[in-house]
Length: 315
Image 1 (cartoon, rainbow, N blue to C red):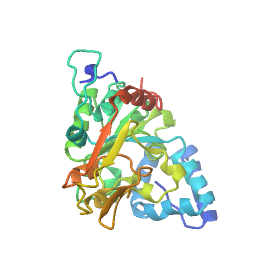
Image 2 (cartoon, rainbow, N blue to C red; image 1 turned 90 degrees about the vertical axis):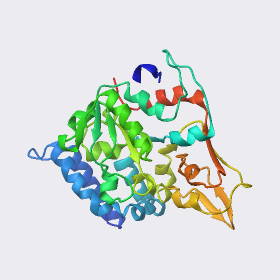
Image 3 (cartoon, rainbow, N blue to C red; image 1 turned 90 degrees about the horizontal axis):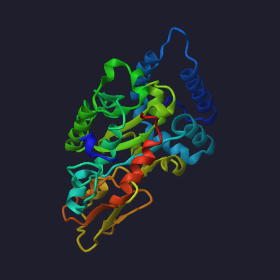
Image 4 (cartoon, helix red, strand yellow; image 1 turned 30 degrees about the vertical axis):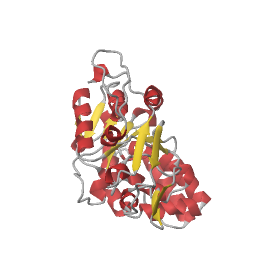
C-alpha cells in the first residue's frame, strides 16, 4: 500500500483564577519534580480529563466572551495547531469518481484517506492507541471506545506502553481502513493538547490522526469556541459541499448529525454555513433524499500531503 502512494484542562470561570491555574499547569508540564516522570504526568492527565470533558462546551463559549480567557487558552492549549478534517471515503465514492496517477504500477482512484495513509508511509515511528480518550471520557455507547488515535513521529516513544502499541506502516494503514469502516472520521495534523497530555516533548515530534465519532469528538466544541481557535480546525483543501434544494425534504437528519452545527433546517429548507462546515461528509450519508453532495479537487492531494507533512518531523 505504502509503495503505491506518492503522497484538556482544569479551570474556574473567573479569568484571574484561570490565569493562575493555567500557568501553574503549564509550569507543571515544563518543570515537573524529579520523582514525577513524563509518563506519570501523562497518566495523571488521563484521569483528570474525564471530570472536565463534559464542560468543554461551556469553557469554549468563554473564549468568545473574554479576550483574556481566549488568549490564554489559545496560547496554552492550541498554539501552533493545524488540524484537517478528511472527508469520509464512502461519501466520496458516492459523489465523484476521480483517477490520479501515482509513481508506481497499480494506479487506482485516490480517496481522501490516502492523505492519511501517505503520511503514515513516511515514518517508522507509529503508535496505535487502544482507547479513545474522548469516547472514554464521554462514556460513549454508540462507537467503539477501543479504537483510538494513531500518532506519528519520534514522540511516540514517550507514550506509556499501556495506552497501546508501536505499529508497522502496514498495520497502521489497515487500522485506518478499519476505523473508516466503523464510521469514524479521520482528522490529521498537529495538536498541542496531545503533546501535553501524552508528554511527548516538542510539538514537531508528534502528529495526531484522530478517528472521531460525531458524539464525543473534542472538536465538537468548534460550534462554541472563538473563531481564532476554531480556525485551527480546517476543512480539507479542495473540498466542496453543495446542496440541491429541490431534493431536500426538510427532515432535519443533516442538522442532527452535524457536529459543527453548520447544517440547519429553517422553515423546512436546508442551509449550510460554509464558514463553519468542515466537510466531514456525515450529512451526505444521513440525507435520505441525496440532496447533499461532497466533492474534492484531486489535484490538491499532493499539496495537502506536503503541507501537513511539514508540520511534524516524520523522517
